[in-house]
Image (cartoon, rainbow, N blue to C red):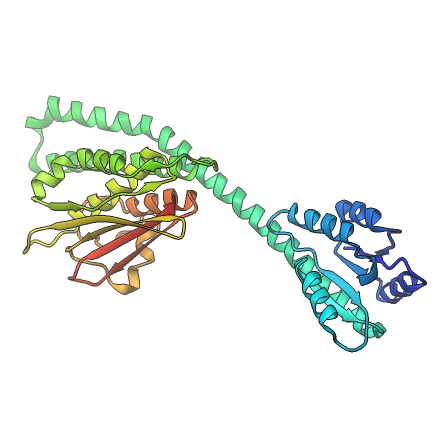
Length: 365
């Protein structure tokens, strides 16, 4: 959290350092531009730079150094400018200096309390940056731990669950006829719960895989093929529901084919699941290109979603219907959200109860 002071002409550097030292702020005085860059690389909370020391080569080097910093870092710079009347040249120079980023211009002659106040503000801002970085790192680690837990749990719980399913089936075959009605009901409940738990673990494993998609540049794929794969996987449900599905022109998108297919399958599967009983199901899949992204839409005429739940439904294990009418574990939309966000996209819904839903998601193309 030291402040670097670059003012190579006269005693400005020493006077500024004394002014800050009075506040118990650690200071260092680089002799020239290259020394400033070396000290910045070693670590600093801020830098006070006299305008006359910012030559064209140092400006270029400083811009390059600032651009090389991590996303959380925004080094505050205090630049001492020349006083006097404003001119066209001084205005242009101020614009050039502001282009460095987090810059505060202090006109000379600067009062000591002005310099002290600006330095304190710069150091507070820098400290907040470090605090945010620490929180982000803790959050990333917590997410990684949760993803690893989900992955391990989905594997480790399968073995005892398999034993429950196997022995309940053996019990039903060997002793089923001898059991009374209440006992058979209990046994049926065990088998049903084991089957549901299998589905839950499968979904949890899928979610864990979606969370671990690596950050990498993906070659564009044409979206029609992933959509066709999703429709093939849903063929039975489509046939049973008599769904009428229309498909518009599909663009290319930078997302793995299997992941795009999974998003389509979950969204179309939801449209089939949450259809209305009193009218034929219609699903429209369309897409458009906008601002470097492919924007996809899956619209239906189903039961819709209340406005209060438009964000909630994308949470893991979030189900709006707990009456048993609709199957599922409430994780399908969470998987869609996690996949889309891994590709720097987003997903949202436009819906009204009784008037259907339109799910949108966009990914780079």
